[in-house]
Image (cartoon, rainbow, N blue to C red; front, side, top):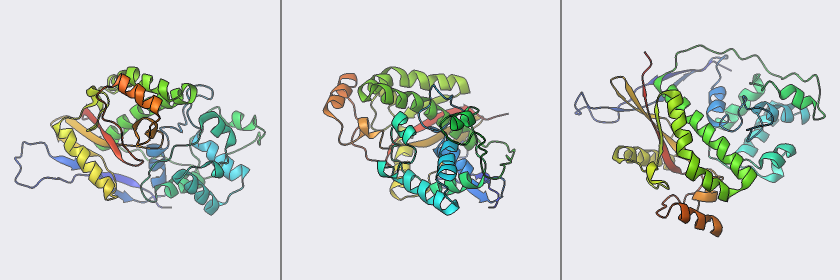
Length: 328
């Protein structure tokens, strides 16, 4: 496989008759150059998988899904799948998770089945290819865990060593990192609450903890991190006029099945970053078209003017709106 170096270029969205001092929205676009030491699948895995399948989560606390290396070990070492079989079975499960396709019974019993999500075309295959071809991150506890469950005590992960390419992060990379790390914190707590206490308790968690947790990530990154929507539940998440324009733009891009890229505004030393929040099957428990009556009653009790319902899988439910300083 060839080596990917991602360079972010700037494309202005407005006509050239704009005043020079007005902020110009730009799209972060990926100019991809393939290189064996920096496969595209790694970046896709970090973006789409690590929110739930974190390689740094502790073994017995705070995990909401198995690490990616556990999936690799099960499919390759336990099932004996070759490269084509591995890519096929991983892709088929991820794109439409069902109990009939389950191989990791212990993980399903502990965490529940993976929510169905929409992925950019071809991205799951690229992730699976990278997993098979390269050694991926292992939690420090994984080998003992694997061996302690009746598997090979001398297990060694297959694949080539991955050599990281040291490059300076672009502002788009930084903004995406802030969004995904915040999503990871919120998702871990929300899914943990659903798994342990159910959907009604998860509503209470969102009502009390979602904004404080988001604010804590703002403090951590010295940024302003917000989740906003045109159909908001909490009035504090109501999108302003500028944000509404970009929500509409992302909705159009999703409808036309275009590649989804962050939108950036750069004004002096400030960066404004926008990225879509997409619904998956887990979201539909509280935001879908067929919400359980007891859940609907609780929603209206907590949010009498709620607008955040009626969604289907793969729709834009809002955006990340993040403001931060450029790195010196």
